Each structure stands twice: as structure tokens, then as C-alpha cells.
Image (tube, rainbow, N blue to C red):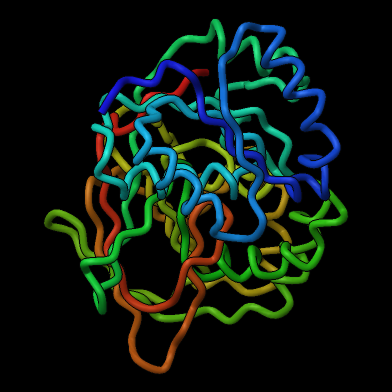
Length: 306
């Protein structure tokens, strides 16, 4: 396979309430003005990005630019982690953030201004970041990857609500959280990692690589996307009133100081949910399933230009 030196750009026209479609002509002009050689494809539906990335990898592309938000980047990373055409250590990814939350971009302070974001990819530092892997116990051969955070329970419940309010922009996350508080039901869970076990009724359990999620919420204690660990936070059997009182701490990073929250650094953790319960699981702000699963870390899996 001959080496291709140009970039492959994936564009989500619906990101940011249609900002992808509106801004793409300006982004395309900026890429060319900054000397990028590239081909591009525009996604037509959810999941289409995975198909497009697979085709690009078969053609030999190893450098990718994602024009979209956290969900678009999630598709790109899942496609790149699952494909077997290009070695992972040859892959490079850049992001032009135009989504609703842009939580992964916030981690690296990637600017929203188009020209500055393009210049960041051109001259930014390459960093190898860890990637998380979800394997459902009912189907361990199938993997779902995440580059920022995954969670089960209230976290997934809020994601489901947020999708109804995406037209509100960043406010969708706060509204989704408030509505979620009033409708979510806590659930029993069994977590096991290394020589530790935890059985409890919980509000949620989240597993972070990046610092931010849900439009700027900080749900884990000390995440580092390059340390080879998942930052785990488990919120206990909180009532709706208690959760409402903790809303400010969801955004200022103090939630992990609560006596109701258990934290740990893990490389692998198994999450078991008993029959009769079906809390939602999300990864990078996308609903990915229900049931029992295992989360593990793949150290320094993908190179990003940040």
C-alpha cells in the first residue's frame, strides 16, 4: 500500500445544531490557506462516519481531521481503533470543534475559532493519549472505545435527555441534568477491580480519561489522559434533593470531595448489574447499551495534534 501524505477530513454537518454545514466552507478555505492537502467526506447519518473512516483506512490514510463535536470524534476513534489496515502508532488525529459540548477539546484548550483550530493542528504538539475500551460481558468480542469518559446510570440517563434539547446548545446539558434528576432511579451494582470489590446501590459510576464531560461537568477526581489509568468515580444512593444540592460541584470539580462519592485509579474494572435493572451506558456522550460490562485502558493508543 503506497503512503498517502494528505489528510482525510470527516465533516458532521449536524454538529452544533447545524454549525458543521454552515461553517464547513470557511473551514475548507482555512485548511487550504494553511497548506493542508486533504480529501473530505460529509456524514449523512449517525454511524456513517465509521463507514467513511474504514474506507479511508483501506486507501491508506493515516492522518485524520474531525470537523464536529464529541460524538463525531467518538465515531472517528471507534473506527480507527477497530480497523486493521493502518498500525495504530501511525495514526494521527486532529479536531476542529464545532459541537454542542466540545468536552474533549476543552481538555486541551483547543480553540473554537476556525483559523486558530486549524493552526493548532498544523503546528500543535502531537501527544499520545490513552483510549478506553468497553466490552459487554454478554458479547466480549465486541468492543466500544472512548477517548474521554464513559458512565452508567444517571450519566447515561442525562445523555438520553440531552439529545432532546440539543437545539439549546450548551444549556442542553444543564437542562438534561435537572430533568434527569427528577426521573432517574438508582440501581444496585457490583464493581470489581484488582483486589477490590464494591457492592452498593448507586446513582452512577463513571470512568474518565479526560477531565470534562456533559458540557463542562467534572465528574472524576484526577484524570490524566496519558497516565495509563482510568479515573473512576462512583456516586452512592443519593436522593433527588441531595443531587440538586450537588449540582454546583458537578461543574467546579468538587463532586469527588463528597462523602457519597468513591474514587479510584484503575486499569481494568468490571461492572455487574443484576437482572431486572437496565441503567443506560454512555461513552463520550453517546448511548452505547445496557447491562454488565468491563472497562479497560489502552495506554497511549492514538496520537492527537493538540
